[in-house]
Amino acid sequence: MKENKIICLVLLFSMLTVFNSCVKVGEWFIGLNLQPNMENSPFEPGLNVFGVLKTGPGFDTINHHFEVQQLFDMHDGDYGIEIRDAKITLSRMDDNDSIIDYFYPEHKSDGLYFARSLTVLPAEKWFYTCKYDTFIVCAECIVPSMPSLMNKLPVIVENQIKFDVVPDTTAFMYLAYIMQDEHFAMEQKIANQVNVTSFVVEANWDFSESSIQLYLFAYDKNMMTYQTTSNTFFKPNAFRPSFSTVQGGFGTFGAISSSLYVIK
Image 1: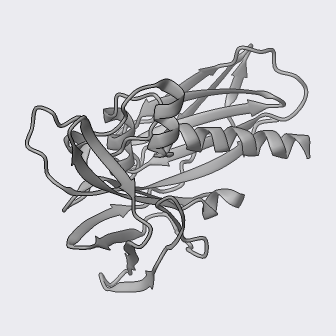
Image 2: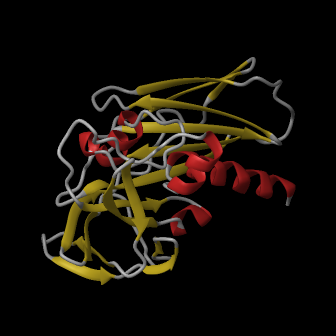
């Protein structure tokens, strides 16, 4: 039970730091304006959107997450307000290139939308549309294949864990989490889509006899762009035009897949 709580807390922390776009909380804690800085460019009103589809083991499959804000031009900087009645539509393409299965995420609070009944599988192509007032934002993504290792299990050398990820053209970045008891370590790498992507994750603790879990996340191109282009440590600001991956607005819509390996 304790181990499950630790895993949940670590993954929750990772989601908050990587995917959470709660601007108010981020600004309150670190005292920075995390909204888009457009002082040197003409202001363009529109919607700020964030959306991620996930597939992987266990509870990881229900963490589809969507946010909508409207961007306003204020005298002291741009400001986003949460939209509670946007119409978000998700649809996927089947093997015959036909659009099937429409889903409508429900609003929960503060511009957050969830689609907990949604089932997402690797290699699927998904389409996203968000409508509010006169604004329409569209995007699409391909769900990465679940990452796999060249060898069935990583190699442990002293306090290092080494492994190679099988090349995959649908994955553009990997994020590895190593967890044991109350400890965890992480490493992020841009994917090598031609050859293996090699990891050497160094732990700052001595491995015990208990099991070690390796969560390996694969990012699609949109989520890789979002994660590597933003210059904020907390990731609340997906909404800068310089790395927008959507049409008709700002923000990003992408997908992440994950695999779980128990090392010992």
